[in-house]
Image 1 (cartoon, rainbow, N blue to C red):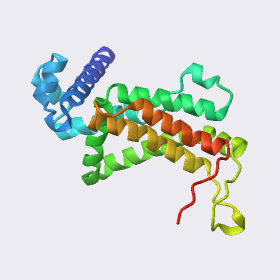
Image 2 (image 1 turned 180 degrees about the vertical axis):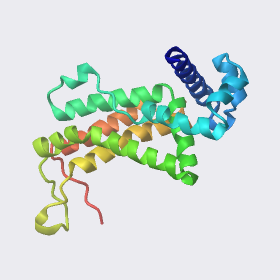
Image 3 (image 1 turned 120 degrees about the horizontal axis):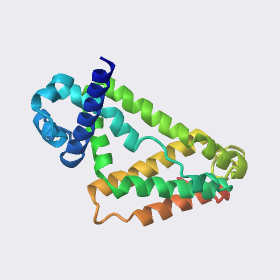
Length: 218
């Protein structure tokens, strides 16, 4: 019985991998149980044994989509960089390159974002994953804010001081920059320049780290 259970779990995993591949290539809307069966090289009945309907299969794919798009990877070479702003710059590049290299993963996240508008369970999973992704940058953001940042001065602010950046705020901006890069790579893969996006992000971080004056607003 144990061997049969292991075999069924392995088959289920194969089906999920095949489903992710079909969805990444064609989108969630084009996902069908028969297409997944063909990709996994199993019968339609085998897919139905593990997933009774498309809705169930789609719900089981969301964790894989979030793992591909909202889980922070920190390469060993980047973890050894000592200056926080420099390390953040390198991490930004790594994440932007990773997500923009194959926009299909992020396109799937957009598909699930749309599904989440109507599905509270999926919406909650996306919310938690994004929260954890931002938290992954919090320590590094805190090092930049507390170790290298001094409050900028803005016109019209009380005592001449502008609002101080926070680790949470910087982490949120960093994730917005990364996912904004991935989004534009999906929408305009030929016209969007990842390097320009990265350079602009790096300048923003350097401005925080080096206490450059904040642009005044009317």
